[in-house]
Image 1 (tube, rainbow, N blue to C red):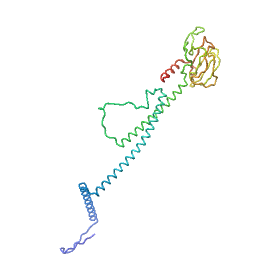
Image 2 (tube, rainbow, N blue to C red):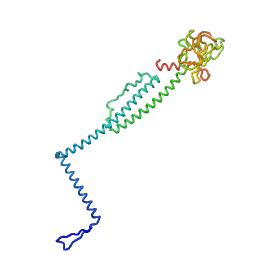
Image 3 (cartoon, one colour):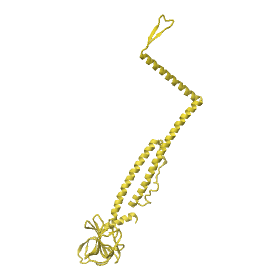
Length: 314
């Protein structure tokens, strides 16, 4: 672009050539000048507004501050609603964990007064040990809630595993011969080596003899299925009960049998009466426990049952 300049002082016309570079530089300089002037005017306006009360500006600033406060309140309400929902879910998980803990407590034989899930655990400490920390932010609080939810879930999974294990052990315990087959009486002959009551020779006694009055109830030491109920020349009227896991109990010398082969008997069920049939010197019960066909010391099983009952407070 070429610009021609005319003036009375000039003896002749002068021309000025403007290139694109000059035009761009001039435009940039103009825009910077406008921006600088606008910034200066805004600064002067704000400075004037802070020292002098201008109703229009004060209303504008108040409206902006109110909008910002409204946004903060809405955000706070939204955060509070989310936290309230999560707290409700955690409360439900804790109630479920308490119920699960009470079931496990019952299965484990822990007395309620020793471990009460309904009461808060005692805590304390000296005031000097308290350290004032900074206020917890929403993000930090949310992180704490996440960690607490994770911990509750882990403990619930652990309690479920413990409950399943205890239920399995309880079921196994129910089919172990651990309760005395007769109430009262005393042991007249233990398991192992002894002198034969008829011949006086050394012999091996494969059971335990419980002396009791004639007709005393004989009960099943554990639940199971009757696999034998018959008369035997040496054992007299005898019963065998299969408890599973290759465990069998034998009850001999009974006066009367109240079950038949194939009957399902419960733990503690009356199955026969004490007598003196077969090779016997007087009214008593000959009680055997066999594992895989091998005679075991029945007293060990009965002692385990007594220890369990003592732990349960029975």
